Amino acid sequence: MPLRLSADTVQEALDRADSRHWTRNPPHSMRARLTYLLKHYEPAALARRLQTTPSYFDALLGAQQVPEDHPLHYAVEREIVRMWQPRVRRRAHATILANGGQMTLSFRAWLGFTATAGSSDDPRLRFLSLHLDAPYPERLFTARRIGAPESELQAILNDALSICYFHRGRPAHPRESVSLDRIDFLEFYY
Image 1 (tube, rainbow, N blue to C red):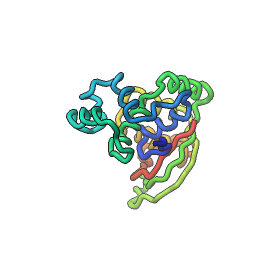
Image 2: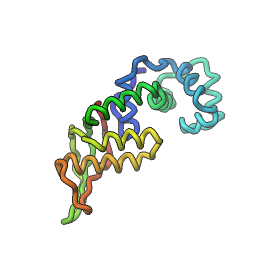
Image 3: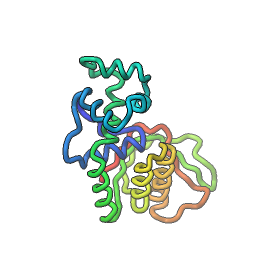
Image 4: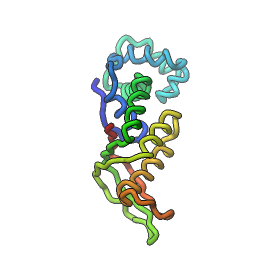
């Protein structure tokens, strides 16, 4: 099953971008992927990460073959992408930050804003590609590395969009902000 390269969350989009720097491919079969994940998690903890019950997870481990359209294939793939080659990931982040810390963001989402005159009552669907400058890549990498929740990552991204797109690097007014609502897809390139 090929990896999806776009995502609808900031966490997954960062993981997918990191996957472009891998030096080896992750395990391909479901059994090999589960074996790899079980080296990092206890079975009950992995079942929680995959959003399933421990008894169902045990049955999945005992199955000879798991169909590719099984709902857990996507969850297992997401965990593999999140966990695979952490040293390569850290090295790629260090290289990016040492060379100016710039990343490109492409997204299609409903973009809303709040300004001193009021807010957009009707967020508009936008497809944009833009560059995020320092310090936002470093803030995203740090928050992702420490396991920050999606809401925190999205707040960092909203700040970055406000500065990089609407204010073109100028400081924003304290009551001006941008928000991505209903993300259709999100991709980072670095």
